[in-house]
Image 1 (spheres, rainbow, N blue to C red):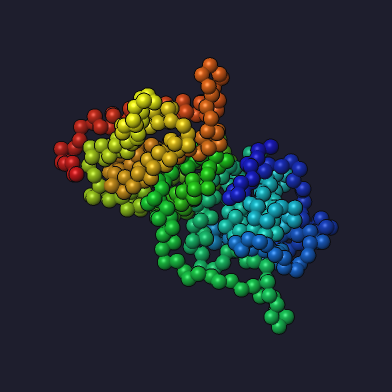
Image 2: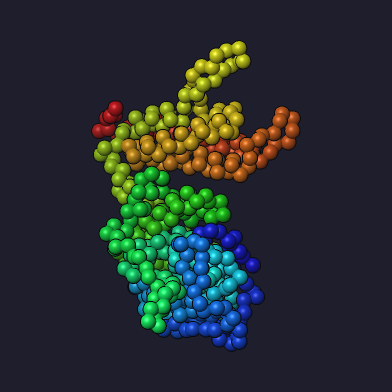
Length: 447
């Protein structure tokens, strides 16, 4: 059994041998409704009240069988339109409103191989945020599309693809994708009022603002990410990066057919990168070509104009100043503290964690500011310094502030400090190599 932990933002995927076989309509304790296309069968316990209930979270939408099938169909039709695919589904998808799930929990997706094909079941709580429902339905639809050509192994959908398309569908839809339970009765007709904001003229505005402040994920890192290790802020940056990636992929020639080809190949490869390169071989013969293309996309999208950026020499000098911040130190108790510039490695190794945390957060803020004037050739280095420090702070918060005393076995915090110092040493070495490279003859430093 392969399981993803339930996270506040992520649908859990379960390969469950105990998944009930057959049609939900065969279960006498369930009321069921089938969608117009016939692919979705929504069930709800017969003893669950049909009267609207209440949730303490205003962002939650109450689900009922009749509104849920409409939501599932809306999400599917928009996804198929974006992929340029007809609605010829192979396997049904059972959706169960599960009263044992807590309000706001993400959907839980079950997948099982039967003698006549794959079976899918999605358990959802009665109250849920619309974005979570969209994400869960997109994920199971991708699984159904990919597994049409699968043998005995289910496809593994990359997280960036599910998240990117979910964000893309929500941003590009002109109607509510998720329909809630009616909450009012007027003249015998149940009505649910919704205050829908006006159509967004720039659907990527929030993405742009996010990626101007926080460095986007590299293409490789998006595919290697462990969602169980992400903080909420890092997750938001991952969402923005995935949204932009899907948006830009869809602008490539023949992209929709290539995405369909990628989905069809996913069950036949142990990693999604091979399926991606096989499908997009015309644009990207190698993974390095994808990274180059993605770097150019990020430079143009985030507003990093190389014409107004510093020269490489100036940028590296600014980075050096930032990662060697001035601090007050004293060599012995009798001396007054004096100001000196210390390397990040020394700060992490010698200062107590509460003090170093304040200093490192300030360094992170300065690195974000430098990014707007850093030339593209130095942006990956700057971003890696920032990500290393952010990763250290996140992990150190969990590991604890204390370190082991001399002569005692190392603690988790000691091992983490050693790991981060080693990584910073490697970045310093790369920075020195970058500074030693001869500058182009036409490049002049600007101060």
